[in-house]
Image (tube, rainbow, N blue to C red; front, side, top):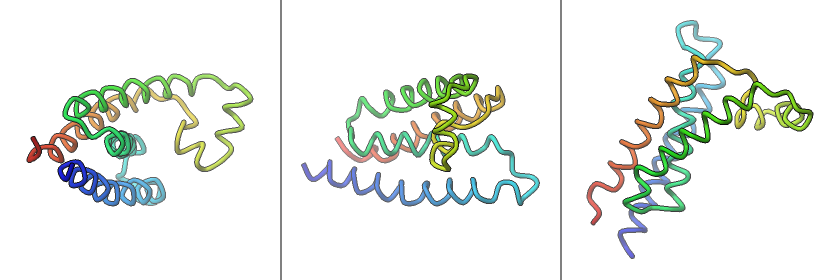
Length: 131
């Protein structure tokens, strides 16, 4: 099982890289005029791909996880069209806004696809040297 340990170490290192980038982006995107708000979707997708891969580091999950993350993220985006009391309550917290968002936007979808594609490439790179 040493290869699984190496894969998990690489995944944890990758999470340690992408998480601060994503959080810093979400914090400073409004202060830098040329940064597009939707670009955060790329970091969001990559983060969830890496987090899921940490628990399921198999060769087949390299393509299954990004696809699953993409589908779930798109469903969450459509869920933003509903203003159910429970969802409104969740969105009142910072972590709720970060997880499920606050406003539906068609412009988010291309970034979800790009992020899932990059997540797939990232996972592929982690698995590259492992049989």
